[in-house]
Image 1 (cartoon, rainbow, N blue to C red):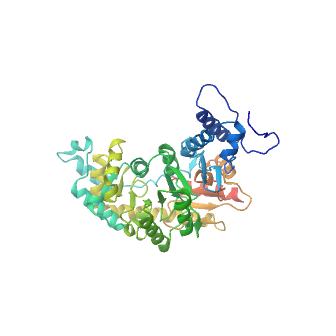
Image 2 (image 1 turned 120 degrees about the vertical axis):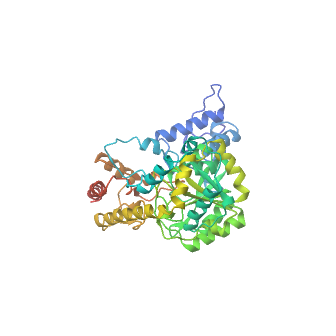
Image 3 (image 1 turned 45 degrees about the vertical axis):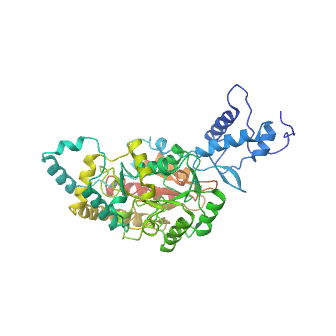
Length: 456
């Protein structure tokens, strides 16, 4: 029984203390997780102060602190000094569950690239199959050859990321690259600054490795200097994750001034910058943050979304001081790319055939974006002709979660803003449209008309 009377005192969460032999902090953490999962505690709910909760339950303050810390590491809670502890919007984000939708749907949810005829890859693969040592490519891969590093440097140079061959690592895709960075450069409990709406793969990887995501205050749709400095001072962030070009999901392109600001603060405060260049190959080359802060930034350039889904490969430009730790993580969780994909990708770059494939990919994306602009004219749909996805801001009074459900009932699968939200504040009511995913323009047109009817 608690020391004070809380009978007529409002508390947003009143857990029941069970002394069944289990650790009290684990019991509390499990109860908190259940109450969040069941909807009893909604995203944005402010939890009682830890000392007040300890007094209510008649237990030690450290027990409450341990339970809150465990739930924070799972991404269920967020908070900072002076603001309290809140139920996080990203706590229940689960795209694995969302992707169980039926196969008969028109998919505008997953960022699957448009199906293209890829004669360049077929031609290279046939040539490789006729070579005497082709079977060696079916063995384990234990490194990158010098000429393959040179090919990677050439490709990275095209997207404004000049890098030395000695700073190149490879991973089995962009998502695995992010997971490897969390495993190699962060430890459970570390905090990472992100945009309030962020790529869901970062949310899931952060949960897996116990990294806490902290939303950074925005100005003009991108991280602000005051917000970043506040997160360093008050939240103790160790690094940030950014997508400067066509941010997922908002499609925002980061200003030159913001890139310079992030690089300067990273150098001054020893921040680790994870720079995701997922859309870089389809955009006009702009300077990377890596080029401005090469000792603080890990740059990721993945190929599956812009070249071919079969090329599940990512090139990483890595500062030498992080190189050994990241290579160790890649090796031990077996995220190295295969020898076959490495050879095929490197030949595609070295031969120049990658430019032909990229040109067709860009032309297809432009046609899809033009269709979006025609059918959804009059609505706020952020992005332009180079965007792999578009960000639809819903009219006043529309809920993104309800819009997502209603679209699903009509045969179109989309992701509302709740899948991308981080922190305690409710996200803008928006929907990401993965326009690259439908099989052809006719299927995309059908989906867009259904969504337009819903908007009306």
